[in-house]
Image (cartoon, rainbow, N blue to C red; front, side):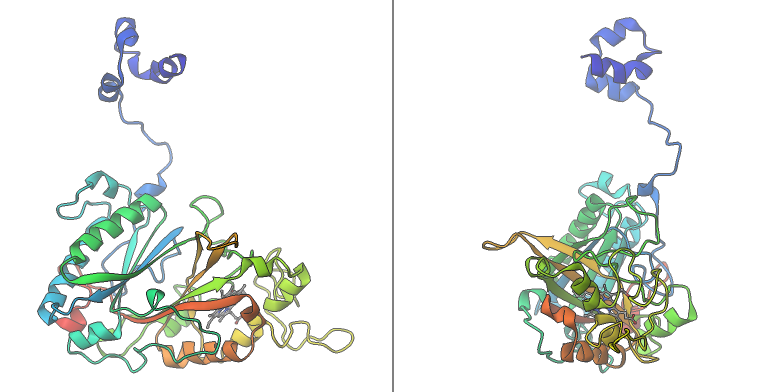
Length: 394
Ligand code: HEM
């Protein structure tokens, strides 16, 4: 076809016209030199695996996040657990650097790491199996009145957070890791989340959730002392690690549709155009919670999410959420929400008081329902030759 000949034009130039007439796709593949990219490709970008902290926490959030909750089989003892974590560490160390896993069944899929990270978290059951002592907060959260938790999205012994800027890379990494868990664990839950595709927005743009809100503005900034204080634990085997809370929060988009724009903005206390507080102009303007309207009402209402969520000093969390959008049931046209993910050194001290305040009063509760909840201790990183979990198991 004309199109094919056009595409082959450059490649066959040195082969001659006779070859061009009878050329087939196989020949073309052999004779075409690999294209030389003029700009570095996103697929080549790598996040270091080894280090003091695990990757995937202070890493700028990638476009795709897959969260897997695994349960240890009854037959997996402390020794088996150690073996499992050594194998998974090896897989993650390779795959995140664009190297196939050992016995990778599709090694070509490992070649584009696209900022792949694999982050491990330990549930209470895993720490018990290791015959270790977990932090006091490592347990299911207290029950909240807003909760409608489903076991199929809750708890678990081992968390794998697999994130990357390419969905095929993430799927391949998940498959390789899961294959190696087969004789040690069973899959309890799996949650697939997304943000904007890579390249859609400038790096550093705060994400938007499916309500259309700018979500993540007031968040500790990785690389600052404030972030370190909020996130990293200094407690025993968890030192250099952190605590993870993962809550699947359903967002009722059909009900949200019935709310007008000013109601939507009042529910959070920020506008929808750029996420500025109702008392400011720009996204990062400091909200003025004392400001009142001409007739004396607070500009940021008492029930507004940001007023209720704002933590006292020492009560902050670091949020790193993903959106989800699944097949709707019945007559509804959406089954959507937020895979709420927060990292904090001490879940009891930092997360729980905040969630308690939101449980008591937060207008957003009208449209949101937590349907899954899990808490994990995220161990520190490791050096080459070590493994994730060695501070608990070695
Ligand atoms: C702020 C949405 C659940 C804690 C915000 C903001 C939005 C938002 C739009 C304002 C921009 C920002 O600073 O990020 C949501 C939605 C949720 C949800 C749609 C559920 C689907 C939660 C939960 C918590 C939480 C469960 C913690 C228990 C916070 C905090 C802030 C915040 C700490 C910053 C408050 C401040 O300005 O100091 N959220 N959120 N959010 N949210 Fe949420």
